[in-house]
Image (cartoon, rainbow, N blue to C red; front, side):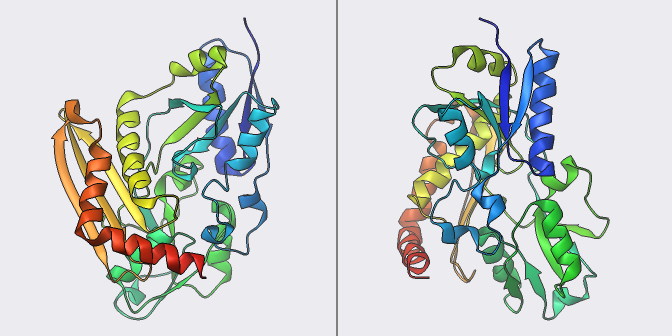
Length: 305
């Protein structure tokens, strides 16, 4: 059976760039495609921090519904936005070759770094890591797509805001005034694009399998396994990065308290052949060394806020 593949996407500039990348790749393989933009609640409600919604799939839920009601065939996501458990009937179909994993600080001058400053981010992970390094700084919430957040930084008296490098690079709007935050551990799967399809859609799953990048898949699966084992359904300041070099996986994972004062970290290197269960084992190490009590405290703080 030959059919036109309907590609669901959020309608922000970055989401459309990602969807068009998949569209072009599929068309290069001879498939006919169509883009179907879908609004998400995460895009529409910009006055609340993400964790207050109580669901981790805020940016993916609308696309999940569109797929399960047969309005679209596949959906393209920034993988870091996707819950570690996909809805019943939806499966991973491909992970594109990963882009830049790093966070960067867009700033208005760096004199404030050794003094008091105001930094904007909507991420608990970025907030906790920033406060761990700069405890005298104030963190303000920042929401919206990348263009909206850049404009908010211009319009306010903040010293800087934290972004994923990949998002700004993809749509070519990374300002000169930035610092690479090499010390900040990224979100699990940051820089990776995930394409999902319906479990029973053999046509789309076969078409998308040609776009899968195996090394990226291995790394993000380890990071997300680490996240899933730690979080237990709770949003928390968790960072993870796996990198493959010379047939070895180098992994760093961190868990912070919400205020950045507590930090649990694991760093390990293993052969790629031992990848199965690696993310879970690293998470268990953190849980056993005090992370379990911290996760309980984080859940309580978020539920009572």
